[in-house]
Structures are given as C-alpha cells and as structure tokens.
Length: 121
Image 1: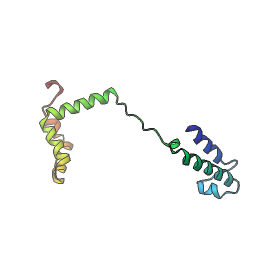
Image 2: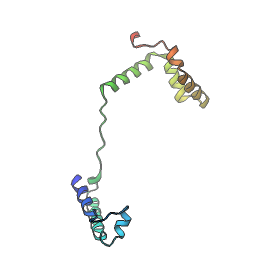
Image 3: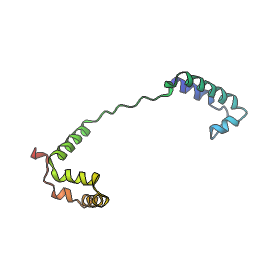
Image 4: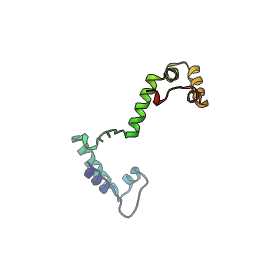
C-alpha cells in the first residue's frame, strides 16, 4: 500500500514548479500528462483492489494507569450511592437537573460530601 501511494505521489510531483491544488496541476500544460497518468493508474488499481487504500483500524491498548483509573471508577460507581445518583441525574435527568448537577460538581460539592474512599474497600 505504501509503495502504491509513493508511486502515485512520485508520478504527480511537479518538476521545477509547484501548484496550490490538484486542479491547478491538472490544468498546467507540463503537469497534465503526469496527473492524468497518475489518475488512470489510481482508478485502475482501486477498481481492481479497493482494499489497497483501506486503513487498518488501530487497536486500543490501555496503559496501566488508565486501567487503574477505570477500576477505581467502577468501584466508585458500585459503592458510592451519592456518585451513582449524580451520574443518573447528569445523564438521564431533565435539563434543569443536569444543570444543577453540573453546578454542584463545579462548586466541589461531591468532593466535600462524599465519604467514599479506596480504603473502605
């Protein structure tokens, strides 16, 4: 795949001058044959084998820190009823309830009043 892309780019590379867009390159008398040949090659290859340009989806590999944060969040949702209620109101409540919960969080209400700690487990 990378060889194909490199070949297309090399075919379209202007010699001695530059263009701001592909349209300009296609209209240029010097570059038009190169652009046309590159387009024909691209169409031929992609028509035969469209997977050539498909990108592999990157796999997500969480770090140890992220795994620990996820575990802590799960434990807090499981054992801290105040936090669980806050999440329910934040996501499932009315707009007024969501705004009130956002104001509470911004004022530090849950940090001051929550009794949940990792030590309780």
